[in-house]
Image (cartoon, rainbow, N blue to C red):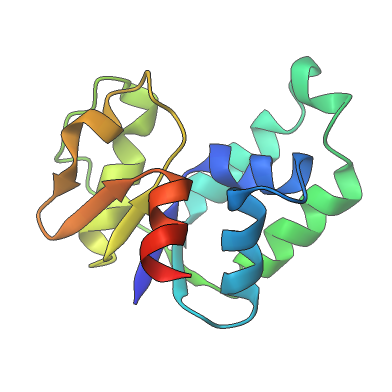
Length: 136
């Protein structure tokens, strides 16, 4: 099974070690499924982790370890932004889902419109709670 994890899920795993995002991240690290990411997402993680609102709660060493771990995932180099997202910053997530032929795109962002979309082709777009209930 192949999965795209929204950056907010990855950050949540670092912030709250006992929630669904952390359980998902640990399950991936235990090889329960394959994570698909991209150079674009890795750049977003690096950039966003430096935002003032995250600097107080994200430890740089943990962010660095996560980036190193993600470089061992399926990393897509070139994405075609064919799908429109309500939030243009999320278009790369849809492109990763399509290019990576993934089963799930997991996001916690209820305002961006991805969850309301429900799917892109065969990829289901779900919350961390739904993913945990169905997969873990």
